[in-house]
Length: 299
Image (cartoon, rainbow, N blue to C red; front, side):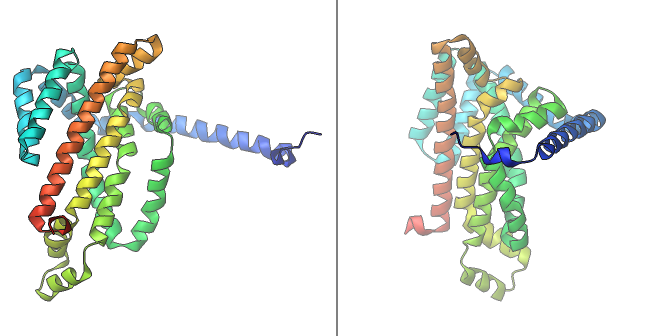
């Protein structure tokens, strides 16, 4: 005799009530998107304008100039000629295989998403570090954001704003922001209390302790959070291509639907190359910051 599922014990009336609740929620969100969608879209117009301008700047500038600027930024962050040479070789190979334009589109959206994640994430992390109550409220939200399937982020965003760059940016930022928040909070909380007491004894205000003591000492952890945020943003590129975000993700999606093995492989390797560049450069900068502060890694 087949075992009955415990769901079968629920009264039929309760199941129908759940269906009604779901339908009411769907109808409410649709009404909300129709009523306020245009206003919310206009709110993001400055961000869209900046994103389009930055993408055109990368696409219309001579490739040699863009390559030189990226190489200089990599060297400024790492002070390593080996790493700088690796960045140049990787970008030259990307250009040689005809993926330069898509790489620049991906680079533009990842840069903007990372800037937004830093601008939003670090203040939230600071607030969590300064208040246990804020931490208790934000932590469950971060848990949900990190465990929610990436495709789920696309549903409310697309219903509200349609397809395009801005929905993609919002979905990427929501998916990628938790690490920088968590590690900013952790880095500030790990600052030695004796150091803070010494700063207070010298007459430092709460603002001075934050900006002159806590944030500098927490910088390695914050940089690790930024590093993970960049990696997660790059991981979201292919998924974001499903809602019209141009870049390396669209050829990968096309290769999946049409079984183009080489197209998907090359563009996937270009995404990997970008991830390695961001990872190595940010890690090198974090190590330099730690040595400059005379932290434990320098011992």
